[in-house]
Length: 226
Image (cartoon, rainbow, N blue to C red; front, side, top):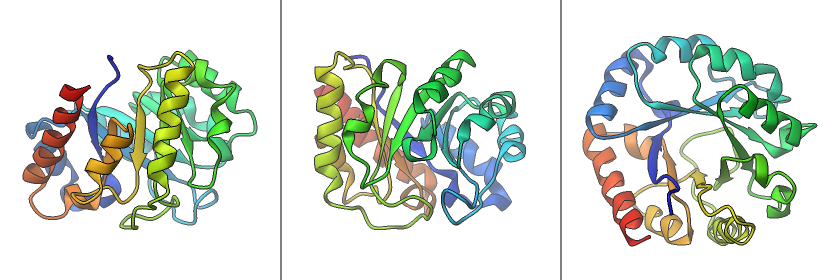
């Protein structure tokens, strides 16, 4: 299968005083994706950052910008995020009045489209949009805050999503996981079928280069087995 196997570190846990230095460290460690959580204070309580920050870090950074929109009606921001430097946009099924249309608009903008499912959102939500989806993000915590504990029941959900995509004829569409992914949980999510791994504090806390390399070793080993 040709679906990507990637570590996508979440800059929500980065030190913004030295963000540029930390991104360079990630690139030097072999990281190829960057997870960018955009929060509006409505879909989730916190407000994080938006186009100005993305545009700033895009300069001199070659990483794939994996933009995760935790905002209401995210279709409003597709063009501005593209202009800022996004490569992919993942929207929450729960936040879109017209999910099919929003995914189509992301692709029409020349970006990779993703659907995020909150822990309690059923997998059946994907039934009629898989043909417009380049990635499915399974939230393994409730969205909005970093540092939460992995929800054990999400391992079954990851398997269910992976099986649904495979049986529908989309084996190359990756399953991304976000929330509570660390040295204790990464093996479990990889075994369940995840291939794009979002991690924040477990990457940015301590030695960023060593942390990223350890994650990448686990991910590469899983990709080899597949």
